[in-house]
Picture (tube, rainbow, N blue to C red):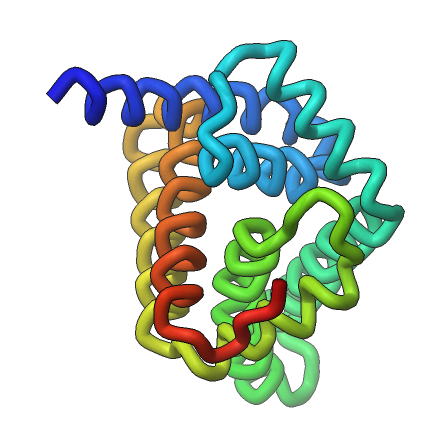
Length: 186
């Protein structure tokens, strides 16, 4: 039982580090990827280890800092356009919701799939394959994200802890998918 509690406390601690390093929004995905890496590789949860892991992620290339904020910016711009009543707003709203519903599990899967030394285009291809072949798992990740947002809105202080739990879920889905096979790229 103490091993389970230790794992849970590591998730919470890694979640706090992730929330802290996500404050500059541009680094949020890199911070989440570092959390996934720490939990997957069972690295000791400490600030020094987290910073070293984040540095590994940042060295993987500029795409980790550029693409996720751009995707978020496009989704937010579309939502603002829908809210302002642009012509075709219902169609744009549907497209925006579907794109967001696909982007969330794709991003979680990509973060969990990244390994030191891997390039992001390769990781993205594998995550896309996982998204298509593991629809049930992708829906679980989407639901977990929605629930995390609901909890964070209801109890704002939990926003500091929830990224670690989402990272743990993303790693669990990735490892389970690797046991099944499709999209497996090493």
